[in-house]
Length: 457
Ligand SMILES: Cc1cc2nc3c(=O)[nH]c(=O)nc-3n(C[C@H](O)[C@H](O)[C@H](O)COP(=O)(O)OP(=O)(O)OC[C@H]3O[C@@H](n4cnc5c(N)ncnc54)[C@H](O)[C@@H]3O)c2cc1C
Image 1: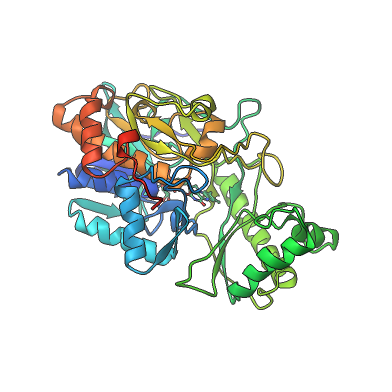
Image 2: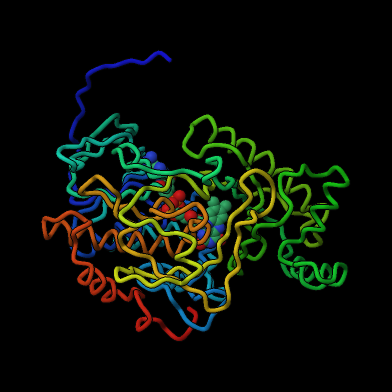
Protein backbone atom coordinates (compact mmCIF):
# COMPACT_ATOMS: atom_id res chain seq x y z
CA UNK A 1 0.00 0.00 0.00
CA UNK A 2 1.30 3.44 -0.90
CA UNK A 3 1.69 5.79 2.09
CA UNK A 4 2.38 9.51 2.35
CA UNK A 5 4.27 11.42 5.03
CA UNK A 6 4.07 15.17 5.47
CA UNK A 7 4.70 17.76 8.14
CA UNK A 8 1.68 19.61 9.39
CA UNK A 9 1.04 22.76 11.44
CA UNK A 10 -2.12 22.48 13.49
CA UNK A 11 -3.77 25.43 15.21
CA UNK A 12 -4.20 24.91 18.99
CA UNK A 13 -7.69 26.34 18.85
CA UNK A 14 -9.15 25.34 22.20
CA UNK A 15 -8.27 24.42 25.75
CA UNK A 16 -10.23 22.56 28.43
CA UNK A 17 -9.47 20.81 31.71
CA UNK A 18 -11.25 17.72 30.42
CA UNK A 19 -11.87 16.62 26.84
CA UNK A 20 -14.62 14.04 26.51
CA UNK A 21 -14.55 12.34 23.12
CA UNK A 22 -17.98 10.95 22.22
CA UNK A 23 -21.23 12.40 23.54
CA UNK A 24 -23.21 9.16 23.97
CA UNK A 25 -24.69 7.86 27.24
CA UNK A 26 -21.21 7.49 28.77
CA UNK A 27 -19.86 10.77 27.38
CA UNK A 28 -22.71 12.98 28.56
CA UNK A 29 -22.48 11.64 32.11
CA UNK A 30 -18.69 12.08 32.11
CA UNK A 31 -19.05 15.66 30.89
CA UNK A 32 -21.84 16.59 33.33
CA UNK A 33 -19.99 15.06 36.28
CA UNK A 34 -16.67 16.83 35.58
CA UNK A 35 -18.32 20.19 34.81
CA UNK A 36 -20.45 20.09 37.96
CA UNK A 37 -17.27 19.69 39.99
CA UNK A 38 -15.81 22.80 38.41
CA UNK A 39 -13.81 21.59 35.41
CA UNK A 40 -14.06 23.17 31.98
CA UNK A 41 -15.17 20.45 29.56
CA UNK A 42 -15.21 20.07 25.79
CA UNK A 43 -17.32 17.29 24.26
CA UNK A 44 -16.19 16.19 20.78
CA UNK A 45 -19.08 14.55 18.95
CA UNK A 46 -19.29 13.47 15.32
CA UNK A 47 -23.11 13.55 15.23
CA UNK A 48 -25.37 16.60 15.66
CA UNK A 49 -26.77 15.72 19.08
CA UNK A 50 -25.92 14.19 22.43
CA UNK A 51 -27.01 10.66 23.34
CA UNK A 52 -25.17 8.37 20.91
CA UNK A 53 -27.09 5.15 20.28
CA UNK A 54 -29.90 6.47 22.51
CA UNK A 55 -30.65 9.34 20.08
CA UNK A 56 -28.67 9.41 16.83
CA UNK A 57 -28.86 5.61 16.98
CA UNK A 58 -32.67 5.84 17.50
CA UNK A 59 -32.74 3.51 20.51
CA UNK A 60 -35.27 5.03 22.89
CA UNK A 61 -35.07 2.47 25.68
CA UNK A 62 -32.77 2.59 28.71
CA UNK A 63 -32.73 -0.72 30.56
CA UNK A 64 -32.45 -1.55 33.50
CA UNK A 65 -32.42 0.51 36.71
CA UNK A 66 -33.33 -2.41 38.96
CA UNK A 67 -31.69 -5.73 39.63
CA UNK A 68 -32.55 -8.36 37.01
CA UNK A 69 -36.07 -9.43 36.17
CA UNK A 70 -37.83 -6.43 37.64
CA UNK A 71 -36.31 -7.10 41.03
CA UNK A 72 -37.83 -5.01 43.79
CA UNK A 73 -34.80 -2.75 44.22
CA UNK A 74 -33.11 0.04 42.27
CA UNK A 75 -29.40 -0.52 41.75
CA UNK A 76 -28.53 2.39 39.43
CA UNK A 77 -28.66 6.01 40.61
CA UNK A 78 -26.64 9.16 39.95
CA UNK A 79 -26.80 10.98 36.63
CA UNK A 80 -28.13 7.87 34.81
CA UNK A 81 -31.24 8.02 36.99
CA UNK A 82 -31.42 11.81 36.90
CA UNK A 83 -31.61 11.74 33.08
CA UNK A 84 -34.49 9.24 33.09
CA UNK A 85 -36.33 11.26 35.76
CA UNK A 86 -35.88 14.43 33.75
CA UNK A 87 -37.01 12.92 30.45
CA UNK A 88 -40.12 11.48 32.14
CA UNK A 89 -40.80 14.71 34.04
CA UNK A 90 -40.58 16.80 30.84
CA UNK A 91 -43.13 14.53 29.15
CA UNK A 92 -40.85 12.78 26.67
CA UNK A 93 -40.81 9.34 28.23
CA UNK A 94 -42.23 6.86 30.68
CA UNK A 95 -40.98 4.22 33.04
CA UNK A 96 -41.86 0.80 31.77
CA UNK A 97 -41.15 -1.61 34.60
CA UNK A 98 -37.66 -0.69 35.73
CA UNK A 99 -36.63 0.69 32.31
CA UNK A 100 -37.25 4.03 30.64
CA UNK A 101 -38.83 4.38 27.17
CA UNK A 102 -38.44 7.82 25.61
CA UNK A 103 -38.83 9.88 22.46
CA UNK A 104 -35.39 10.33 20.99
CA UNK A 105 -36.02 13.96 19.99
CA UNK A 106 -37.11 14.77 23.55
CA UNK A 107 -33.99 13.06 24.91
CA UNK A 108 -31.77 15.16 22.62
CA UNK A 109 -33.39 18.31 23.97
CA UNK A 110 -33.15 17.25 27.61
CA UNK A 111 -29.46 16.38 27.32
CA UNK A 112 -28.69 19.73 25.71
CA UNK A 113 -30.61 21.51 28.48
CA UNK A 114 -28.61 19.70 31.17
CA UNK A 115 -25.38 20.46 29.32
CA UNK A 116 -26.30 24.17 29.31
CA UNK A 117 -27.21 24.05 33.01
CA UNK A 118 -23.79 22.58 33.78
CA UNK A 119 -22.36 25.90 32.46
CA UNK A 120 -18.82 24.68 31.79
CA UNK A 121 -19.62 22.21 28.97
CA UNK A 122 -18.81 23.22 25.37
CA UNK A 123 -20.29 21.01 22.70
CA UNK A 124 -18.47 20.51 19.41
CA UNK A 125 -20.85 18.74 17.01
CA UNK A 126 -19.94 17.57 13.52
CA UNK A 127 -16.42 17.02 14.86
CA UNK A 128 -14.44 13.82 14.45
CA UNK A 129 -11.68 12.78 16.80
CA UNK A 130 -8.56 12.32 14.71
CA UNK A 131 -5.41 11.89 16.80
CA UNK A 132 -3.58 12.56 20.04
CA UNK A 133 -0.24 14.15 20.86
CA UNK A 134 1.53 12.35 23.67
CA UNK A 135 4.38 13.59 25.82
CA UNK A 136 5.91 11.45 28.54
CA UNK A 137 2.92 9.11 28.84
CA UNK A 138 0.36 11.94 28.89
CA UNK A 139 -1.98 13.13 26.16
CA UNK A 140 -1.27 16.84 25.76
CA UNK A 141 -3.60 17.55 22.82
CA UNK A 142 -6.58 15.96 21.13
CA UNK A 143 -6.66 16.61 17.40
CA UNK A 144 -10.02 16.90 15.75
CA UNK A 145 -11.29 17.31 12.20
CA UNK A 146 -14.35 19.35 11.31
CA UNK A 147 -15.59 21.93 8.80
CA UNK A 148 -13.17 24.29 10.56
CA UNK A 149 -10.32 22.07 9.44
CA UNK A 150 -7.83 20.21 11.60
CA UNK A 151 -7.52 21.72 15.08
CA UNK A 152 -5.97 20.80 18.39
CA UNK A 153 -7.53 20.95 21.86
CA UNK A 154 -5.03 21.33 24.72
CA UNK A 155 -6.24 19.36 27.71
CA UNK A 156 -5.22 17.90 31.05
CA UNK A 157 -7.46 14.84 30.98
CA UNK A 158 -9.12 12.85 28.22
CA UNK A 159 -12.18 10.62 28.63
CA UNK A 160 -12.66 8.17 25.77
CA UNK A 161 -16.40 7.60 25.37
CA UNK A 162 -16.38 6.83 21.66
CA UNK A 163 -17.79 3.33 22.24
CA UNK A 164 -15.07 2.14 19.86
CA UNK A 165 -12.07 3.18 22.00
CA UNK A 166 -10.89 5.40 19.12
CA UNK A 167 -8.79 7.61 21.39
CA UNK A 168 -7.28 4.74 23.35
CA UNK A 169 -6.36 2.83 20.20
CA UNK A 170 -4.72 5.91 18.72
CA UNK A 171 -2.86 6.51 22.00
CA UNK A 172 -1.42 3.01 21.87
CA UNK A 173 -3.51 1.43 24.63
CA UNK A 174 -3.71 -2.33 23.99
CA UNK A 175 -7.19 -3.59 23.14
CA UNK A 176 -9.11 -6.68 22.08
CA UNK A 177 -11.96 -6.99 19.67
CA UNK A 178 -14.64 -9.63 19.23
CA UNK A 179 -14.87 -13.17 20.48
CA UNK A 180 -11.71 -15.07 21.27
CA UNK A 181 -11.99 -17.79 18.61
CA UNK A 182 -12.30 -15.59 15.49
CA UNK A 183 -12.50 -11.91 16.50
CA UNK A 184 -16.10 -11.57 15.32
CA UNK A 185 -18.15 -8.93 17.16
CA UNK A 186 -21.86 -8.95 17.86
CA UNK A 187 -23.86 -7.82 14.80
CA UNK A 188 -24.62 -4.21 13.99
CA UNK A 189 -28.23 -3.03 13.76
CA UNK A 190 -29.61 -0.01 11.95
CA UNK A 191 -32.54 1.06 14.09
CA UNK A 192 -35.58 2.58 12.39
CA UNK A 193 -38.87 4.14 13.36
CA UNK A 194 -42.27 3.56 11.82
CA UNK A 195 -45.45 5.61 11.98
CA UNK A 196 -49.11 4.74 11.37
CA UNK A 197 -49.25 1.99 14.03
CA UNK A 198 -52.44 1.00 15.88
CA UNK A 199 -50.52 -0.01 18.98
CA UNK A 200 -53.49 -1.33 20.99
CA UNK A 201 -54.33 -3.66 18.08
CA UNK A 202 -50.68 -4.75 17.83
CA UNK A 203 -50.58 -5.53 21.56
CA UNK A 204 -53.75 -7.59 21.28
CA UNK A 205 -52.25 -9.58 18.44
CA UNK A 206 -48.95 -10.11 20.22
CA UNK A 207 -50.15 -11.04 23.67
CA UNK A 208 -53.56 -12.63 22.96
CA UNK A 209 -53.92 -13.94 19.40
CA UNK A 210 -50.33 -15.09 18.88
CA UNK A 211 -50.24 -16.71 22.33
CA UNK A 212 -53.47 -18.56 21.52
CA UNK A 213 -52.32 -19.62 18.06
CA UNK A 214 -48.88 -20.79 19.20
CA UNK A 215 -49.20 -21.97 22.81
CA UNK A 216 -45.84 -22.10 24.59
CA UNK A 217 -44.18 -19.77 22.07
CA UNK A 218 -42.54 -16.63 23.44
CA UNK A 219 -44.82 -13.70 22.55
CA UNK A 220 -41.94 -11.20 22.78
CA UNK A 221 -40.00 -12.67 19.87
CA UNK A 222 -42.89 -13.56 17.50
CA UNK A 223 -40.62 -16.15 15.87
CA UNK A 224 -43.48 -17.88 14.00
CA UNK A 225 -44.41 -14.67 12.19
CA UNK A 226 -40.95 -14.25 10.69
CA UNK A 227 -40.76 -17.97 9.91
CA UNK A 228 -43.98 -17.69 7.91
CA UNK A 229 -42.78 -14.55 6.10
CA UNK A 230 -39.57 -16.35 5.15
CA UNK A 231 -41.42 -19.48 3.98
CA UNK A 232 -43.62 -17.27 1.79
CA UNK A 233 -40.54 -15.61 0.27
CA UNK A 234 -41.43 -12.22 1.76
CA UNK A 235 -38.36 -11.94 3.95
CA UNK A 236 -34.68 -12.87 3.71
CA UNK A 237 -33.29 -14.85 6.65
CA UNK A 238 -31.27 -12.03 8.20
CA UNK A 239 -33.22 -12.30 11.43
CA UNK A 240 -35.48 -14.73 13.25
CA UNK A 241 -36.72 -12.87 16.35
CA UNK A 242 -37.95 -9.38 17.00
CA UNK A 243 -35.18 -7.83 19.12
CA UNK A 244 -37.31 -4.98 20.36
CA UNK A 245 -40.32 -2.83 19.52
CA UNK A 246 -39.94 0.38 21.49
CA UNK A 247 -43.02 2.43 22.12
CA UNK A 248 -43.92 5.42 24.26
CA UNK A 249 -47.51 6.54 24.85
CA UNK A 250 -46.41 10.13 24.20
CA UNK A 251 -46.11 9.11 20.51
CA UNK A 252 -48.85 6.47 20.39
CA UNK A 253 -48.75 5.68 16.67
CA UNK A 254 -44.96 5.32 16.40
CA UNK A 255 -42.65 2.40 17.09
CA UNK A 256 -38.86 2.03 17.13
CA UNK A 257 -37.77 -1.29 15.67
CA UNK A 258 -34.67 -3.29 16.59
CA UNK A 259 -34.58 -6.01 13.95
CA UNK A 260 -31.94 -5.56 11.25
CA UNK A 261 -28.79 -7.66 11.73
CA UNK A 262 -25.51 -7.19 9.89
CA UNK A 263 -22.87 -9.75 10.80
CA UNK A 264 -19.22 -10.27 9.96
CA UNK A 265 -18.36 -6.61 9.39
CA UNK A 266 -15.93 -4.42 11.33
CA UNK A 267 -17.27 -1.56 13.43
CA UNK A 268 -14.03 0.38 12.96
CA UNK A 269 -13.68 0.13 9.19
CA UNK A 270 -15.18 2.91 7.07
CA UNK A 271 -16.08 0.63 4.16
CA UNK A 272 -17.73 -1.93 6.44
CA UNK A 273 -19.69 0.78 8.28
CA UNK A 274 -20.92 2.12 4.94
CA UNK A 275 -21.89 -1.36 3.79
CA UNK A 276 -23.64 -2.15 7.08
CA UNK A 277 -25.68 1.06 6.96
CA UNK A 278 -26.83 0.53 3.37
CA UNK A 279 -27.61 -3.12 4.07
CA UNK A 280 -29.40 -2.17 7.31
CA UNK A 281 -31.61 0.30 5.47
CA UNK A 282 -32.44 -2.33 2.83
CA UNK A 283 -33.40 -4.80 5.57
CA UNK A 284 -35.41 -2.10 7.36
CA UNK A 285 -37.56 -1.37 4.30
CA UNK A 286 -38.12 -5.08 3.81
CA UNK A 287 -39.12 -5.34 7.47
CA UNK A 288 -41.68 -2.54 7.08
CA UNK A 289 -43.33 -4.48 4.23
CA UNK A 290 -43.36 -7.64 6.38
CA UNK A 291 -44.89 -5.77 9.32
CA UNK A 292 -47.59 -4.32 7.05
CA UNK A 293 -48.49 -7.75 5.74
CA UNK A 294 -48.20 -9.92 8.86
CA UNK A 295 -48.87 -7.79 11.97
CA UNK A 296 -52.50 -6.78 12.62
CA UNK A 297 -52.48 -3.11 13.58
CA UNK A 298 -49.57 -2.33 11.29
CA UNK A 299 -51.36 -2.63 7.93
CA UNK A 300 -50.86 1.07 7.22
CA UNK A 301 -47.48 1.60 8.85
CA UNK A 302 -44.78 3.57 7.06
CA UNK A 303 -41.07 4.19 7.37
CA UNK A 304 -40.62 7.34 9.38
CA UNK A 305 -36.82 7.43 9.60
CA UNK A 306 -33.72 5.32 9.99
CA UNK A 307 -30.95 6.02 12.50
CA UNK A 308 -28.29 8.62 11.72
CA UNK A 309 -25.62 6.29 13.12
CA UNK A 310 -25.55 2.53 12.91
CA UNK A 311 -26.04 0.64 16.18
CA UNK A 312 -22.82 -0.97 17.32
CA UNK A 313 -23.16 -3.60 20.03
CA UNK A 314 -19.50 -4.42 20.29
CA UNK A 315 -16.22 -2.93 19.18
CA UNK A 316 -12.75 -2.47 20.68
CA UNK A 317 -12.42 -3.31 24.38
CA UNK A 318 -9.43 -1.68 26.05
CA UNK A 319 -6.94 -3.46 28.28
CA UNK A 320 -7.44 -1.82 31.65
CA UNK A 321 -6.08 -2.22 35.13
CA UNK A 322 -8.77 -4.88 35.63
CA UNK A 323 -10.70 -6.87 33.02
CA UNK A 324 -14.25 -7.81 33.98
CA UNK A 325 -15.11 -11.40 33.06
CA UNK A 326 -18.35 -13.34 32.73
CA UNK A 327 -17.30 -15.25 35.87
CA UNK A 328 -17.31 -11.98 37.81
CA UNK A 329 -20.84 -11.37 36.59
CA UNK A 330 -22.22 -14.84 37.20
CA UNK A 331 -20.65 -14.93 40.68
CA UNK A 332 -22.14 -11.46 41.35
CA UNK A 333 -18.68 -10.48 42.53
CA UNK A 334 -18.18 -7.45 44.77
CA UNK A 335 -15.18 -5.14 44.44
CA UNK A 336 -13.54 -2.72 46.89
CA UNK A 337 -13.38 -0.17 44.07
CA UNK A 338 -16.99 -0.58 42.94
CA UNK A 339 -18.41 2.44 41.09
CA UNK A 340 -21.87 0.95 40.52
CA UNK A 341 -23.93 -2.06 39.58
CA UNK A 342 -24.81 -3.93 36.42
CA UNK A 343 -27.84 -6.20 36.29
CA UNK A 344 -28.76 -6.98 32.68
CA UNK A 345 -28.73 -10.54 31.36
CA UNK A 346 -25.74 -11.60 29.24
CA UNK A 347 -27.28 -10.57 25.93
CA UNK A 348 -25.07 -11.84 23.10
CA UNK A 349 -26.54 -11.63 19.60
CA UNK A 350 -25.28 -14.25 17.19
CA UNK A 351 -22.02 -13.03 15.64
CA UNK A 352 -22.38 -15.03 12.41
CA UNK A 353 -26.10 -15.43 11.79
CA UNK A 354 -29.60 -14.46 12.91
CA UNK A 355 -30.92 -14.66 16.47
CA UNK A 356 -29.07 -15.04 19.73
CA UNK A 357 -25.76 -16.70 20.56
CA UNK A 358 -25.33 -19.74 22.82
CA UNK A 359 -23.33 -17.51 25.20
CA UNK A 360 -26.53 -15.69 26.13
CA UNK A 361 -27.26 -16.28 29.83
CA UNK A 362 -30.42 -15.52 31.75
CA UNK A 363 -29.66 -14.88 35.40
CA UNK A 364 -31.84 -15.59 38.43
CA UNK A 365 -34.18 -12.84 39.71
CA UNK A 366 -32.38 -10.23 41.80
CA UNK A 367 -29.12 -10.62 39.83
CA UNK A 368 -26.66 -7.74 40.12
CA UNK A 369 -22.90 -7.35 40.12
CA UNK A 370 -20.44 -4.59 40.87
CA UNK A 371 -18.30 -2.74 38.31
CA UNK A 372 -14.73 -2.00 39.48
CA UNK A 373 -13.20 1.43 38.80
CA UNK A 374 -10.01 -0.22 37.52
CA UNK A 375 -11.87 -1.42 34.38
CA UNK A 376 -12.14 2.26 33.34
CA UNK A 377 -8.41 2.90 33.70
CA UNK A 378 -6.45 1.97 30.58
CA UNK A 379 -2.97 0.58 30.68
CA UNK A 380 -0.14 2.82 29.58
CA UNK A 381 -1.46 6.40 29.44
CA UNK A 382 -1.46 8.57 32.57
CA UNK A 383 -4.30 11.02 31.86
CA UNK A 384 -6.88 8.90 30.06
CA UNK A 385 -10.10 7.31 31.33
CA UNK A 386 -12.53 5.15 29.38
CA UNK A 387 -16.29 4.89 29.89
CA UNK A 388 -19.06 2.99 28.12
CA UNK A 389 -19.06 0.09 25.71
CA UNK A 390 -15.27 -0.02 25.30
CA UNK A 391 -14.19 -0.52 28.94
CA UNK A 392 -11.96 -3.41 29.94
CA UNK A 393 -14.05 -6.59 29.86
CA UNK A 394 -14.37 -9.85 27.97
CA UNK A 395 -16.53 -10.35 24.87
CA UNK A 396 -19.10 -12.32 26.89
CA UNK A 397 -19.18 -9.94 29.88
CA UNK A 398 -19.82 -7.06 27.46
CA UNK A 399 -23.13 -8.77 26.61
CA UNK A 400 -24.43 -7.44 29.93
CA UNK A 401 -22.19 -4.43 30.56
CA UNK A 402 -23.00 -2.75 27.24
CA UNK A 403 -26.47 -1.46 28.16
CA UNK A 404 -26.99 2.23 28.79
CA UNK A 405 -27.32 2.52 32.60
CA UNK A 406 -23.92 0.88 33.04
CA UNK A 407 -22.32 3.02 30.30
CA UNK A 408 -23.80 6.08 32.02
CA UNK A 409 -22.60 5.24 35.51
CA UNK A 410 -19.14 4.46 34.14
CA UNK A 411 -19.14 7.86 32.40
CA UNK A 412 -20.12 9.57 35.63
CA UNK A 413 -17.32 7.80 37.53
CA UNK A 414 -14.84 8.89 34.83
CA UNK A 415 -15.97 12.51 35.16
CA UNK A 416 -15.59 12.52 38.94
CA UNK A 417 -12.26 10.65 38.79
CA UNK A 418 -10.96 13.09 36.15
CA UNK A 419 -11.73 16.00 38.48
CA UNK A 420 -10.07 14.25 41.40
CA UNK A 421 -6.97 13.34 39.40
CA UNK A 422 -6.58 16.89 38.06
CA UNK A 423 -7.04 18.38 41.53
CA UNK A 424 -4.47 16.03 43.05
CA UNK A 425 -2.05 16.20 40.12
CA UNK A 426 -2.28 12.40 40.02
CA UNK A 427 -2.87 9.80 37.35
CA UNK A 428 -6.39 8.29 37.28
CA UNK A 429 -4.96 4.94 38.41
CA UNK A 430 -3.73 6.64 41.60
CA UNK A 431 -6.90 8.46 42.65
CA UNK A 432 -8.18 7.78 46.14
CA UNK A 433 -10.97 5.31 45.43
CA UNK A 434 -12.68 5.89 48.78
CA UNK A 435 -12.88 9.61 47.96
CA UNK A 436 -14.22 8.77 44.50
CA UNK A 437 -16.92 6.57 46.00
CA UNK A 438 -17.79 9.25 48.54
CA UNK A 439 -18.15 11.83 45.77
CA UNK A 440 -20.29 9.48 43.67
CA UNK A 441 -22.55 8.69 46.63
CA UNK A 442 -22.96 12.42 47.25
CA UNK A 443 -24.58 12.60 43.80
CA UNK A 444 -26.86 9.63 44.58
CA UNK A 445 -24.88 6.95 42.80
CA UNK A 446 -25.45 3.42 44.06
CA UNK A 447 -22.09 1.84 44.81
CA UNK A 448 -22.71 -0.96 47.27
CA UNK A 449 -25.44 -2.80 49.18
CA UNK A 450 -26.16 0.00 51.68
CA UNK A 451 -26.98 2.43 48.84
CA UNK A 452 -29.58 0.21 47.15
CA UNK A 453 -33.06 1.72 47.05
CA UNK A 454 -36.05 -0.49 47.85
CA UNK A 455 -38.13 0.41 44.78
CA UNK A 456 -37.48 -0.23 41.10
CA UNK A 457 -37.32 3.29 39.62
C1 LIG B 1 -29.29 -2.09 18.27
C2 LIG B 1 -28.96 -1.82 19.70
C3 LIG B 1 -29.91 -2.01 20.68
C4 LIG B 1 -29.63 -1.73 22.00
N1 LIG B 1 -30.61 -1.87 22.95
C5 LIG B 1 -30.43 -1.36 24.18
C6 LIG B 1 -31.51 -1.26 25.09
O1 LIG B 1 -32.63 -1.69 24.81
N2 LIG B 1 -31.28 -0.69 26.29
C7 LIG B 1 -30.05 -0.23 26.65
O2 LIG B 1 -29.91 0.29 27.75
N3 LIG B 1 -28.99 -0.36 25.82
C8 LIG B 1 -29.16 -0.88 24.58
N4 LIG B 1 -28.12 -0.98 23.71
C9 LIG B 1 -26.75 -0.70 24.16
C10 LIG B 1 -26.44 0.76 24.26
O3 LIG B 1 -27.24 1.55 23.42
C11 LIG B 1 -24.99 1.07 23.90
O4 LIG B 1 -24.11 0.07 24.28
C12 LIG B 1 -24.62 2.38 24.58
O5 LIG B 1 -25.31 3.42 23.92
C13 LIG B 1 -23.14 2.62 24.57
O6 LIG B 1 -22.90 3.90 25.11
P1 LIG B 1 -21.55 4.63 24.78
O7 LIG B 1 -21.70 6.01 25.30
O8 LIG B 1 -20.43 3.78 25.24
O9 LIG B 1 -21.46 4.61 23.18
P2 LIG B 1 -22.42 5.18 22.05
O10 LIG B 1 -23.85 5.19 22.47
O11 LIG B 1 -22.07 4.43 20.82
O12 LIG B 1 -21.94 6.69 21.93
C14 LIG B 1 -20.66 6.99 21.39
C15 LIG B 1 -20.71 8.42 20.87
O13 LIG B 1 -19.41 8.77 20.42
C16 LIG B 1 -19.49 9.36 19.14
N5 LIG B 1 -18.24 9.03 18.47
C17 LIG B 1 -17.75 7.80 18.19
N6 LIG B 1 -16.57 7.87 17.58
C18 LIG B 1 -16.28 9.19 17.47
C19 LIG B 1 -15.17 9.90 16.93
N7 LIG B 1 -14.13 9.26 16.38
N8 LIG B 1 -15.21 11.25 16.95
C20 LIG B 1 -16.28 11.90 17.50
N9 LIG B 1 -17.35 11.28 18.03
C21 LIG B 1 -17.34 9.94 18.04
C22 LIG B 1 -20.71 8.72 18.50
O14 LIG B 1 -21.25 9.53 17.48
C23 LIG B 1 -21.65 8.58 19.69
O15 LIG B 1 -22.43 9.72 19.88
C24 LIG B 1 -28.35 -1.28 22.35
C25 LIG B 1 -27.36 -1.11 21.40
C26 LIG B 1 -27.66 -1.38 20.08
C27 LIG B 1 -26.60 -1.17 19.04
